[in-house]
Length: 340
Ligand SMILES: [Zn+2]
Image 1 (cartoon, rainbow, N blue to C red):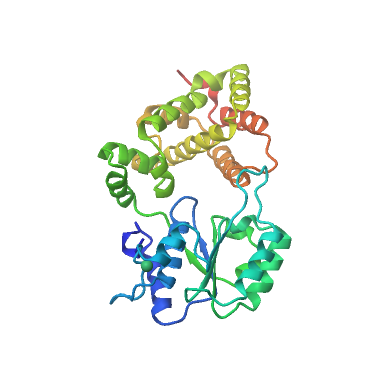
Image 2 (cartoon, helix red, strand yellow):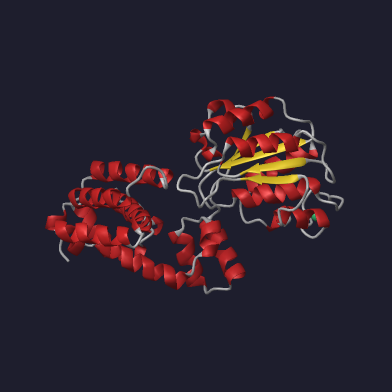
């Protein structure tokens, strides 16, 4: 897919193109920014651009998207293109040292058909220490024809030694209006659904594209009962709900929705523009809950929820976490005083 068809990310695209045109491309790039905003898509298009068979146009090299090389990269079958990623089905997804060693063997040989050997390392923060050290050795003396693109939403989780070998390129979520327009075109959905999905995913287009508006609304309704006064007021109800969610393996999902609710509560409590709320349609309930809420407790809870989301599959007992979060939310909003 050519660069101009990618939604948003004007700055990263400009940096990459300029580096290419002036022949100043670093051997290792670190794409960082929130989850699901399109870092991997840009990396893939860039890999296509630098190996594309079609001569480039006035704006410099780009991917035509239809030549043999572009198609092979898209299908992950190009002999000079590798993707390294953790096994996402594993209990603790990691990029293992064997994967990096194998890559080291692959990268030393000259490209077979393209100009560059490109290696994309997705979720690079999940490199084990051994894998990170092995990668560092390669990055210290990269073969002339090699390009590494590391992708992460948690750059601080990467060893500083690895980070220092990479040129960092920061990605921000595209504007909400851009995401809305893209959803209308790509998913052929009504504007109100596009707007809803853009809001609820905080403009994370990759995520928004995978969601169905009505199914998401139903989920939102369901999970919002978790934070309703009726649930929060009674500790036994709250514990029962947490247990039921855990048993149906939906604890993690519930935590994500609660995090959105807590975020909104904080925004309402500090008098932010309602337009920035994810649960805008529940504004009265948010206002009621925020009225007597303890801001410090909410902020602390939000920070912890954020940390839990980052640790996602690691060392977390979802039922205990959920109980703990609901009890803290109950305290933070003084639930016993809330009306239904
Ligand atoms: Zn091409």
